[in-house]
Length: 187
Image (cartoon, rainbow, N blue to C red; front, side):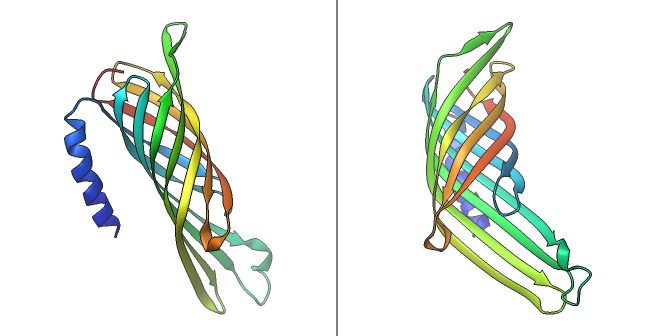
């Protein structure tokens, strides 16, 4: 499934990159909830004009936590593995560039929509493991800023509110992404 999605994204992104109105992004991601999840984010965006782009994001985050209170009892060690993936697409609106000393700061707001997949496994030494997973609709609302380093490169920070709907119930998380953005055309 992942290979198929990756192949489709690659086939879509290569022609867009040649259009010179395209950017790619990547970085470290942290999501709250489920003991806190850390991972990475990659994405791309097609610029329609200097203020509006359509963004495509994929983030993959995971965590392995031990429930420490039971390690010295007859129950034994219990660990919880969480793996969350988000596939999101939507508009990103940029505000006028602010110049601070010699550097340009470009802020933006975004609203992305798509799907998420969560897989959770609980392992216990004496009883084995139990696993459950779910895929559901999700949306993200937030924004961030670009610290423009050169006409093509920028350091990017995002802070977003991510809403997932696993097991027909809503979950709210904050998502922090720190990374870089490379634009094939000039900003």
